[in-house]
Length: 258
Image 1 (spheres, rainbow, N blue to C red):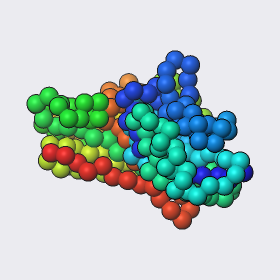
Image 2 (cartoon, helix red, strand yellow):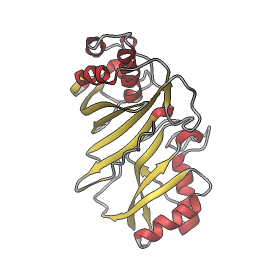
Image 3 (cartoon, rainbow, N blue to C red):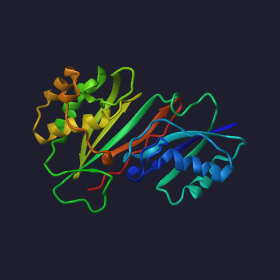
Image 4 (cartoon, rainbow, N blue to C red):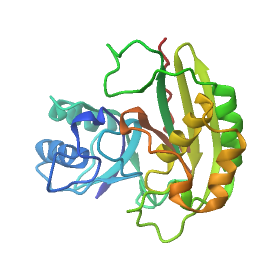
């Protein structure tokens, strides 16, 4: 069997998420169908992360095992052909050894959250950003977010239905910056809790609006109570931006508009 790492870009607006489900179309499903159309093999695609409904990817990584080897570019081109018309693209295919696993070999995962900060409605980025009309102070948001960097109990920022065995995670980096009318949050960790990034964004937006003080984010973290943190930010602004593996990364940025 030959293993391929596939770097995927997709618009999550029309999908029920990454993972195959009974109640909607999943990215995993259309990728596995494309592999079957190419090779006539029934495969299971394993991903570095499981994005929710409406969440996008700039550089998700999934691996598939094929019965015989193919040139990596042939795999990429064939899958892109069979993925049409779905908004999913294989940016790169890479032949790897079986010691590498898309999920379990990941050393760090990167997420990007995009906020369009203006009063005018969206015309070009519907379902791709969170539109916030009130002025946001990105510098205060960044300052508040630094309380979350490091190893913490993130109970206040996990979804009620989160199935992780422990709420303790280590956040390696959290950056908030503005470019024109776009405020962007980049966050990096080995792994995340369900809705962790979106709940962090919802809390930082309260700081940016002036509804919370900078220190209120640290207080919410210390409370270890979901009710103490801010609302869950919409899925539309969230992007799986890449993965670090031993020796290489798939991290990709989205050029801000504004």
